[in-house]
Image (tube, rainbow, N blue to C red):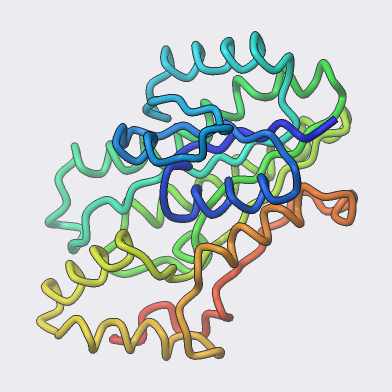
Length: 253
C-alpha cells in the first residue's frame, strides 16, 4: 500500500517540493496551507485543506478527516513556519514574537499531538519536523524565529523518545538559506536593518557556507524522503542540516 503523507504548509516552497518528491515515490499526499490560491494550484490527485497549523480546533478536525478518509497516517512532515520579524531584540513587539513561536513551534506540537495516536495504533510511522540552521547556531536580528526553531528540536528529541517504543521515528531537518520568495523577503528586511544592499546580504549568506551556495527546496525534500524510507529505519532523534555546511551563520557581522 502506498504511503500516506501529510505535509503542513505544503502548497509552496519546501512543503510543495516535499509533496512532489513523495508523490514521485507513489505516495498519497495531503497538503495543508493558509494560502487558498496556492492550494488551488496543487495536482488534482493530492488532498488539500486550508488550515492554520497553529489553530488547534482546525488541526483537530484535520486529523479526524485524515483518519476518516485514509484510515491512518504513515508520514507527518510538520513543515509550517513563518519568518517572523527581522529586528533587534529591543525592537520586537511581543505580539510578533508570540505569532512566530505560535506557528513555528506550537504548529509542530499540534501536528505531532494529533498524528501520534494514529501512528501509535499502527505501531509505525515517521515524523519529520522542519527546523532551521537558525535553530542550531542562533541568528542575530531573528530572535523569535531562532528560539522557535531551537524549540522544535527539543520537541523532536522528546517525540523520538516517547514514540520510539511504538516503532515511530522522529527527526528534524535544518535547512540553511533556501532559494525562494520567503528567503528573499528575509534578506530584503535584513538588508534594510543593516543598511546594506540586497546583493551584499545574498552574497554573505552564500559565503557563509563551505559550498558557497544557497540550498534548493528540492534538497530538503530529498532528505525528507530519505528519512521516511526503509534505508533510514534506524535513524531517529537526529538533527540533520541541509545547508551547504554553514560555517558562519551571520557573515555580515
